Image (tube, rainbow, N blue to C red; front, side, top):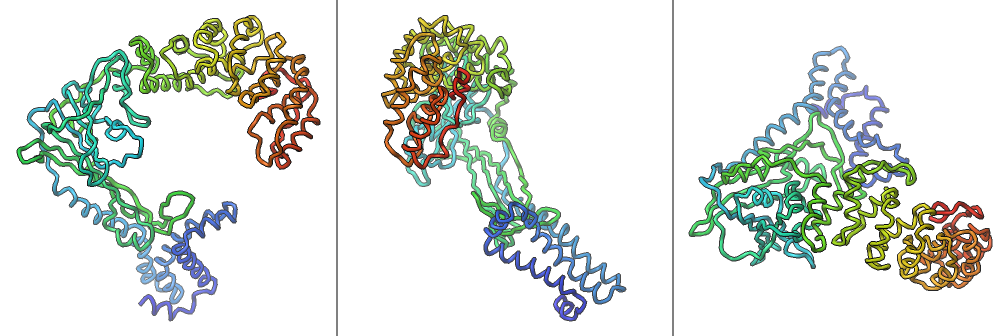
Amino acid sequence: MFASDMDRSTAMSPKFQVFLAILIGFCLLTSLIPEVYIFLLLFSLGMAYPLIYANTLLLYVLAALPALLRYWRNPGDRRKIVIAALLVPLVGIVLPQAVRLIATYNMQGLHVGDVERVLPSPPQQIELFGEPSFATSGNTPVDRAPCDELCQSLLLSRKVDLVRVTRELAIGTARPQRLDYVLEQHGSCPSTFVDGQPILQQSKDAISTGTCFVAKQAGDDPLPLRIARRSQKFDEPRNLARDLMTVFTGVKRVTVMEVSTAASSGWSLATRNTEVTFSYWATPLFVMLAPCHGFCAGAPVFGRVDHTLNAFDPVAYAFKVIGLRQATLPASLGPVERVNAVLDRGNAALTDNQNDLVREWAMHAMRAPCQFRRNGCPPLDAADRATLIRLLKDRRVQDYRFIANVLDRNHDVAADNLDMLLDEMTARGANSTYTVSIGAIVARLDIDLLHLRRDRFLPLIRENDWKRSRSLAMSAGRLGVDTTDLIAERLKKPSSAKSAGEAACMADEAIGRALVPALLDYLRSRPVSNDFPQDASQIVVVALARYGHYEEAKEIYLARFPRMRTSLPSEKPAGGREGLDACL
C-alpha cells in the first residue's frame, strides 16, 4: 500500500524528492564508508557537525512519509492523515519501549542458575580465584596475582588469616599463579601493591603504621572456601545489520561470582550471583555513529541505553555470603598523618609502597593552584611544612621527585632551612640524587642568601659532575667569585656543556662577558647538521645574546644548523635581568 501511494502521488515536490534522495544517499554512504563523516568534518572545519543528525532525520522523515503522501493526495481527509501520522510516535517511542521490555525479559534468563544462601560459619582461610590474566615478560608474581579490594577487605576484617589469590597465566595453563597474602607487623612494609593497583584507604593506613600485606608462595593444599569471579565482555554492534540482529540480546558484560566449599570430589557450589549489563534502543529512538577506538567514525546504528540487572558490590556480597560483618572502620588517616607514621617506624630505606604514600602527600600539599612561580603559590600550612622539612632531613627517603616539586613551590621553606639543606647535600655527596634534586632549587634562591653561604655552596658546585642541566651548577657564576675558568672548562665537556651554558647565561655581568670567547668557540666547534641541536648550542646563543653578541651568535648558529632557522632562540636584551627569566 505504501509503495502504491508513492506511485500514485503526483504532489510530491521535486525539491522534497531531492532532499529525500540526499538523506538516503548519505545514510548509505556513511554505512559503507563511515570515514566520510570525518573527511567532511575536517574539510568544513567543523561546520559539518550537524550532519551527525542526518540519519535520525531520515528515520523520522520515512516514518512521517505515509502521512505526508496522504496529505498531498487529499488534504481534507484528516482522519486518515492522523492515523498515518501515528507511525511517528510508534517508531520513536513505542518501538524502543517494546525492545526494552523484550530485552529485559531475555536478560532475566541469565539468572536462572543463581543460588542464594549464607554459610553457617566464616572460614579463616579463603581462596580468591580470578579469571585468566595475560602477564607480559618481566612481570612479578605480585603483578600477576595482586591482592585486590576484596583480598584487602578480608584481611583487614581480622576474621580471615590468609587469602590465597589464584590467577591463571593464560587460558588452559596447567598451573596458575598463586600467592598467599597475610597481615604481618613490620618496621618497614615490603612493596606488595603494584603501580596502578587500587589500594583501600584503610590499607594505606595499615601500611603507614607497620601492618603489612605480605605475599608468600602458596602451597598446594586446598583451602576450605573458594570465591571465584569471572567476567565476559561482548562487542557492541558496529553496523546497522549487527544492530538489528542483537536488538533483543544486546549483552555487554556478564559477571558471575561463585562461592564454593571444599568437598571430597572437588568443589561444591554454595552460591552463585550473576550481574548482567546490556543495552537496548533509547527512547526516543535516534541514530548515532557506532563507537570506535582511535581517530575514526563508526557506521550508523541506533542509539542505545545501558542497564544493569542484579548489580552487586563484590566485597559486600562476599561478606554477606560467608557470614562476615563489615565492621565500621575508624576514620582514615590523612596524607600528613600517614607520612609521619611511616617516618616514625623502621630504619630501612622507604619501599615503593611507602614512597607512594609520600607521593600522595605531595599531591595533597600541591592541591592549591599555583600559576605564577614568584607570588602565585599559597604557603604551606604548619603540618605540611613540618612534614616537608622532616622528609628533607630523613635519609631513608631516596625518591625526591615529588618532594622537590613541593619545595620548588615553597622557596621560603628552602630559604629558612638553607643551612640544613647544605648540611644534607654535603653529607650525601655532590652527585647524590638528593643534591642534584634539591640543589637545583637552592640554586634559584635569592642571590643574597647564596652570597652569604658561597663558601659552603661553591665546593658542592665544583665537585658536582654537571651532567644534569638546570641543577645546582646554574648558580656557578652568581656567587660573587670568579668562576670563569670553571665554567669554561665544563663547557668543553659534552656531558656538562648544557649546565655550563646555563651557568654562563645566568652569571654576573663581568663573568658572563669574560666567557664570551669560550661561548663563541663552542658554537664554532659544532659540526654542521640539519637536525635540531641536542647539545648546548641553544642556551649558548641565549647567553651570547645577553652579553650583546646575538648577531654574531646567530650567524654561527645558522651556519652550523642551516635548516634550524625556526629553532633559533629569540634575541634577549643585552645586559638583561640576571636570573632565571633571562635564560630558562
